[in-house]
Amino acid sequence: MRKVREEEKCQSCPSKGTGIFCDLNDADLDELSVHKVTNTYKKGQTLFVQGNHPFGLYCINSGNIKVTKTGPDGKESIVRVVQGGDVLGHRSLFTSDYYSATATAIEDTKVCFIDKKFILKMIEEKPSVSLHVINKLSRDMGAAEAKLSSFHQKNVRERLAELLLILKESHGKKQEDGSTLLAIKLTREEMATMIGTANETLIRFVSEFKDEGLIQQSGKSIIILDEERLIEWANLNY
Image (cartoon, rainbow, N blue to C red):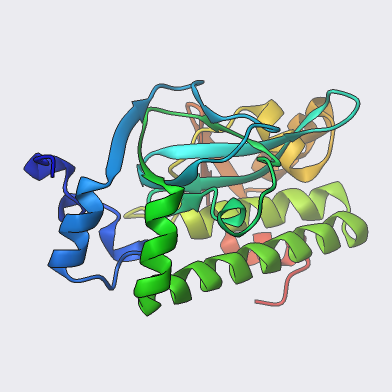
């Protein structure tokens, strides 16, 4: 059994309390630590590519990764953004399907890879891991259904407002003045693909949101100033 450095142990993971392994005891976490491989991906580096054969599970230690799909026309769209505590490749654990999307780091990101054979053994033996995987799959399905409904029922302004609120929930950092900083830097092109619009249209609505005092920008970061009005503009029932 290989020796694992203290900083690479699952017990030292900054996202330990939010992942699918959060209920495991120290002995189980030690075993998991031995069977994982930890890598750092620089911004723009790819974890896996759409159409490739899956070999295991990716567990995000820290950082942000975009998951994208490429259509028959070659156009890329962002399916979701994952962060520390999230997992990737979990759908492929139970099927023989190839990866249906591509995962790319949008900032320096630390990721642990766990071989499919070992993770399936752990899911079989540890009920808590099984339940967390089921919960994750269920939440992914719910998010996909909500996104599909949004695309069919909402205009671009509403979809942009909803996207900002979603990013607030996943990446929001409360500021002293009561505003919320979105601690993730997405390009205008990336945001446009997430709401299914052209880059020029997105820029126009971002300017409108700023003029109306809903948001402001600090460098490449967005700060939410008026969440209540953003909820109204998103046509959501919070």
